Image (cartoon, rainbow, N blue to C red; front, side, top):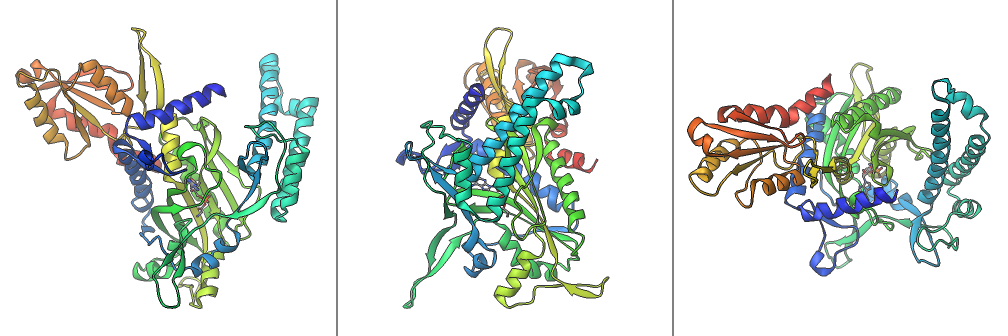
Length: 515
Ligand code: GAP
């Protein structure tokens, strides 16, 4: 674990050193849980967004996009339930003065028990080899049974407390299972309190006063309130989806772990409108589609898992998270929710406008049900950086830091490097750059030794380095170096376009999703 924390720290400094992520307002000592993306970060982020957007609106004829405003009528947040119920249960440790989410502390407690059980099973599997019967072991081993029973008891109390909105019981679980503050190491806890996460500000100024408006805490409501606009103007037929990428804001109290939990972040959300009664079938389909989208990046299937929700929101009849193995454990990157007709129904009620769809096949009108897929751009960014960051020992005993980013997402696709800063090599390199730049983000670099330049490109994940040398001037060939293998091959300049394109275009990733 300590080693993992170390990797995470290195990743954070790498993000800063190589222009991926900077603390916001740094020269004024920063602003808590707000970050800026640098010159390489913004390219990676844009590529992630393009991969998602294209997978939604290019691969699905029945999914279209919108871009709604961040400010919306305040009643929207009343209708959505955010004014009354968008709260986190918080608890403070009186000694360290640190604040935690009570539900997260309890989830971590259960995860620790899961770990203990799994370690016990792994140990036994090693000991007994081929003859090991895991199911029987789990049913009979005293330590496993004891931890399993404890986990179940916590789980049952936790779900009941959440469903009953019983803050005292949440605290009692923390006390009964002797959860300690990781900073002070004590069990000296305050009561659990609810805290609303929405930021508000004021719009306009009239003699009667200004109107209180919220910075949207999710992009989804912009989709719901435009349901009829899009359905009518796009002549959309249920089932169909509306996708949106945009900023969201939450006054996260426990904002830790770098860009994992931010106060200003970006979401990619898609609301898929279906016939009532067909929602669970679509929920299963979108679960599969979304998991495939993640796995196509090639980091290894074992990095992902579903985590079904213990507590369903009152409007949901199914919900799951796609979790990714971050350096600090498996964490939610995306949520997939079956939200019934709650949102559209509620906006119908609050706005007094009919929000229904006439289904010509059924010859009747209804409020469609909704499957939502909701993923954070920043969390996706963090998961990709974490999975790509490698330190490799080389034959000469040096260490190289390389970002093994999926080539389609890499900030730059190729670096053009004249071997020397003279003898016509820079001019020839520029000519190559001028051809490639229309299709790929390229970088030109003539400073320092070629070895140092390779390292710089490795550190930002550039899949190809193209070196222009004296031979280039005579036979129009260059060397192309592959980031992951460091192998170099001599190729014709005229082939560069297709060699690069074959590895780096997002359409290749999209094609994998259709297989
Ligand atoms: N419309 C549904 C919704 O907003 P959510 O589970 O609250 O659901 C969806 O958020 C996704 O947005 C999360 O899976 C996560 O990736 C991202 N997200 C949520 N809060 C975030 C935060 N404070 N910082 C960064 N990303 C966040």
